[in-house]
Length: 383
Image (cartoon, rainbow, N blue to C red; front, side):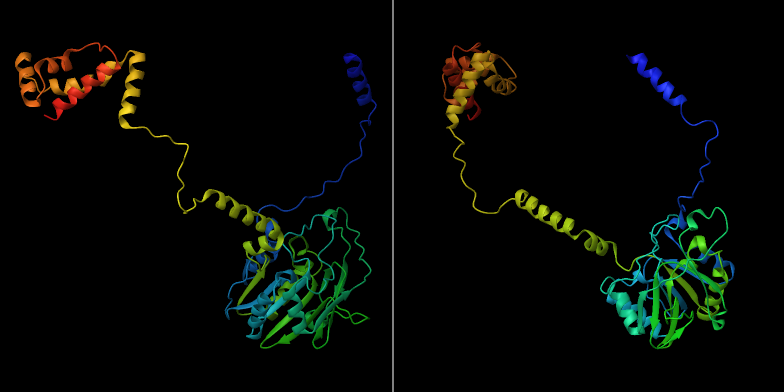
């Protein structure tokens, strides 16, 4: 039977595809190293080569007047507090570029999955809601005709996208946008016109600074910087907003690590705290009155000696009770044993026979007898 199964497997393998097999296109799985973490690494290096002072960061710092332009994703403004800090910096003369979709670092440009968070619901990002409310900008559904691309082997760049052109005031650059987010602004500038008033890029003055809002971060991300006019647009943006100062790309989260843990896993945190309290309650000693242990039975010291003597008698080791005492007393002897016994008898008040018995009785007759010998040795010690 075993050989039959082996032959059947060989037959099935031989009936497979012929030598002319269909070629499979290899699609990149993503970047590695810093480019995997920082979606704006290519833009940062490109601007550095152009002579701009550029840096990237995952968190918001207290930026000073030397920082002229900050580019950040809308998801960075998670809380109203961080939004107020950003708006205060803009009000003092900073230039802010916000991308509603596609600016998150964990978004994979090498898949066919969705391009971002879409038209967000109010309350999803309290900080972004507050900022757009101050700018009088709203987002809505945006429908478009996907651009046709005849280039071959696009692979990971195959998501539907729209090719739009900015106003001539902004250089007339051709930009690619994904997603279905359209922007409406009440008081400001619409840099990409549409028939229904919706736009992919709007701007306005805010205090002493300026704000530019893009529907998607595709023009700035690593794999798309060399497409369309994205590099030229980034040059134009840097010359308009970043001249004479530093340019910063923010690609992380405004929350701290512990804030994210509480936001995403608060139930696990609470369960862990409860288990910790229970464990401490079980382990920490209680400082109340000590109860007497009734299971412990104590006996007089004399009875303990008798019990020990009986045990040593049964094991034949009874001489261990008196051997150390005899050795310590004999260490005082320097002359004739007879004179030593006489001297001990005179000093202790015992008779000479009792002293001799205490030193020479070996082996003892019984436990009671050895106890008497030990008592006599104790008297000799206390003489």
